[in-house]
Structure formats: structure tokens, C-alpha cells
Length: 386
Image (cartoon, rainbow, N blue to C red):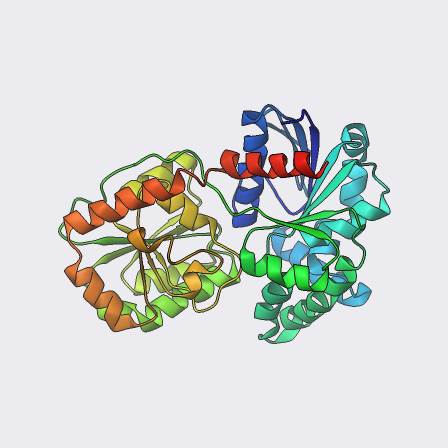
């Protein structure tokens, strides 16, 4: 593999890691170090270099106010919310010296909303990679269904996708995390190169053998400020929990839960763990018998799947919960159904031996799906492409 200097442009990504998108970025960044590549990343709130974080100046505006102002500006300027909120002119000015110093070889731009600002700053590169993270049409489409300011902002974001894609230089390589995303973007930009780089995981390691109790423990894990996760939790309580309440235990864990969600979880007799440190994430996985993915709709492929399987914790999912992943490949470590009675029957009948076999199948599957393996294959592709 050729020696390369990699500059990462990721204004939507902050440290410490709280969101799925940020965890994908950091999984890729850490793999650069393992592969011996020189790498620096410009992030929302600082820079990442040699596996160390150096913060930039702290924001003086509250998150709630920043969201409202960002939505209003997006509407007035007819720009994507993520464009004006994160990949702004101010952000590029703050990181300008770092970006100019590191540019010239391989530049990886994360999220489509970062592309207009990157191109406006006329940054040099030998190879340009655009990491999409989502099918943005599908992602914004989920938010168009609401009302008020958020739905109007989502409509602008949806309309802006085609405009941003039209800015992409001919030599750019688009990287996608699922086959469905790749197909959607390739249909729109058939002359560009497209590459599938699925979500990965750290090296597989079993963290425990489940709860060790007579009552099975289910775990929901994810960013609790995210609408798709909030909708999944509500959907689970409405459709699946009436059949399971009192028969299994549930823990909802993740970052930044709104107060109403905490009240809902408590009212339903479940446990909530908020804003976990890394060692606490290990402990909640160690006590879980299954990770649940009760999604009514899906986009991309979910990093929580890789996190769970890499720790030997099997999955209990709806069809949408495995969006972007192969059901056939995961059949040994996953139970998939959209039927509440089927969930109840499975959890009633599954025994220790079957759970142990599913755990073994999970660890076996993830061996070929580490971040370093995925990213290493991508750089082999780059070498072949020249």
C-alpha cells in the first residue's frame, strides 16, 4: 500500500464521540493509524491527529438556540441545515491554516453538506473522496413528514441534495456505507466512481455471557436525541412491549435523551442509562442478552449492529433495523421479524445453548469486518485505480 497523507474534513463530527456518524469517522481515522498512514482531521470542535484531540475555541451559543438559528438561516438561504450549521464559512476560516498545511494528497470530505464549503475554499488535492454516510434524499425525506419549521428545513435539505451532487468534480470518488446508498447515488452520478465501504468494528471480543439471570435483558443503544432512534423506541413500546413487559427487562442507553423520553422509559418500567463513558458501554453490553433494533423505517446501516456483534451480543430486529446489511449473512446471530407475537415466541423459546451459538456466530462474522480490514481494502482499490 502506498504511503499517503490523509486530510479529513468533518465539520459535523465532534469529540467526544456521541453520534453514529461520528463513530464511523473515528473508526476510519483510527484505522489510518493502524495502517501507518499520516493523518489529520479537522472536526467540528477541534482537530484529531496521532490519536489525540486538540480542541478549538468553545461555542458560546446554546445547542437549542444554535439549532433554531441554523434552521432559520437554512430556509432564508435555501441551503442544507447541515451546510449552514456545521460546514459554514466560519468553520472553514477557523480551520483554514490546518487545512491548507495538510492538503495536496488525499482529502476525505465527510457528509455531502461539507462539499460546497470545501470547494469554495479551493483546497488542493491529488485524490478527493466524498463520504456520503447516508442516502440524503431518504434521510431528509424522513423529516419532511412532520410539521412546522423542521419539515420546511427538511424540504430545503431534500431539494439541495441534487444541487450539491452537481458540484462534485469529475475525479471525485464517492464512498457509501450500504449497497442501497451506492445504487441511489450511482444512478444520479453514473460517470463518477463509487465504492462500498460498510460500517466496521473494533477487533472482536466477547464482553460477557449476557445477564446470567432467569429473565432476559434487552438493550436499546443509540443517540437519544436522534429522531430515528426516538421513533424506534416509541414504536417498540407501542407494538412489542405490551407482549413482553414483565417477561423481560429493557435498558435504553445513549446520549442526550430529552426529558420526555426519560419519562416515557420510566413509565414503561424500563431502565435508562444516559451519556455513557466507554467503559460503561462495555458493561451494558456485558449484561445484555440481545440488542434490539425495533425500527419502523431505516437509513444506511447502523453502527450499533457492528458494536453489538463485535462483543458477541446477538440481535433482535425488525426488517428495517437491518437496513443496509445482509440478512442471509447475519442469519446465525440475528432474529428478524416485524411481528410482535413472533418476538414474544422467540424470547420465550430461546435457551442458553441457542444464545451461546448466536454469540459465537456474531464473533465469527465480524472478524472480516473490522475498520482496518475495510479501510485497507479501500486503499488497495485506490492504489489499483492510480
